[in-house]
Length: 135
Image (cartoon, rainbow, N blue to C red):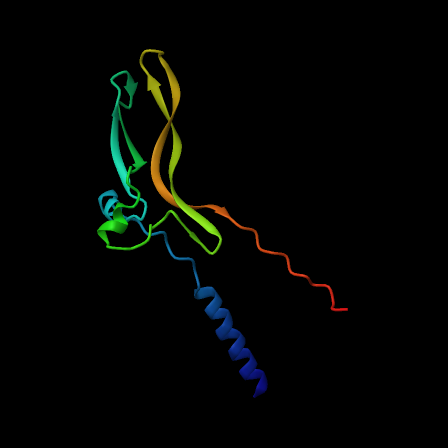
């Protein structure tokens, strides 16, 4: 009887581990993100007639990074604040894009802003614990 209980418990635990899978990343339309992000984003279209593609969408950090907080009537700054020794702030995220330059008749790499994200900018190190035995 004990053997059956142990087998059942082990089987149930194994089944529980198998069923725990990481969730899929949630996706949202850019227009929805613009209205819900803690770090406001400004969308600009860079147009260059001498480049292929001619238009490149750039997602930059907005000038006023506290706009969302003011609209939500929050007292504190949403992202640029210090929390438990961490300093968080909005930063512009950049990536490279390969384009064709018609004037140079060659491929060139451009660095373009692709978003604005709240990151931990600085943090304080934890104090080391004295693990030596008391004297």
